[in-house]
Every structure is written in C-alpha cells, then in structure tokens.
Image (cartoon, rainbow, N blue to C red; front, side):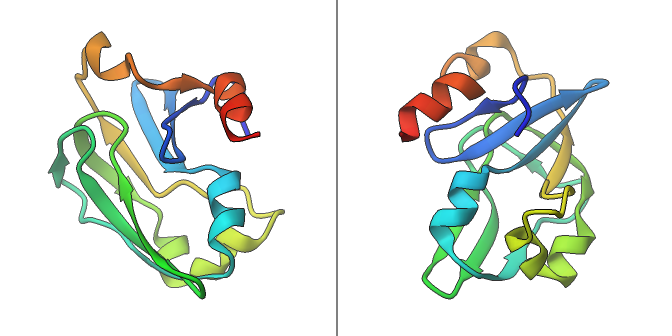
Length: 124
C-alpha cells in the first residue's frame, strides 16, 4: 500500500493523483473478506456524498457496502474487477482501485481520515 494514502476506519482508502482521487478498500479489508466473488460499482457521472455507500462487494463469507471517504463525482470505474472480482484476491494484481472521482471536498471532509501509518496501527 502507498504511504501517501488516506484511510477510513471502515477500511476504504483514498489516493490523490493529479486532482483525481482513487478509491478502493485496503489489503486488510480484502484479507478479512476472504475470496471475493462479486463487485458492483456505480455508473460514471454518479455523484455521492461523504459516507454514502457507492459499491457492494460480496465474498464467500459476506456482502459488504463500500462507503465514500469524501464526496465527489465518479469519473472512472475499474471494469477489470467488475468482470473478474477474484483479481482482488491476487496479491500480484496492482489495479485494486474501485472508482476514480473528482471532488471539491473541503478540509472538514478529510478531518477524520487516517494516514496509512495511523491506519496500520489502528488495525494491529
């Protein structure tokens, strides 16, 4: 995982690159879920508020909703994991992000996000 990532206490991550935010779930969350068999993502253009569910993920153990770490508009979805959700279980697969968004979130929305190092301490 990338040290410049921000994480939520519900195991989503946020990574900013050139003004676009990549959102997914942490490796820890993937390990906890077990074998992932289904991922449902929103359509490009959909807007979400912070803490709103934007995706559903199902594993052999359970179904979980994935929540927005900040508000924003979906500009890209990861079709690879929709078509082959088992790729999320593959440690060598790099493209584990779910969606990419544009956001004009203010600092208040970022206030409760954890640095990756703090997140790692939280889950240990």
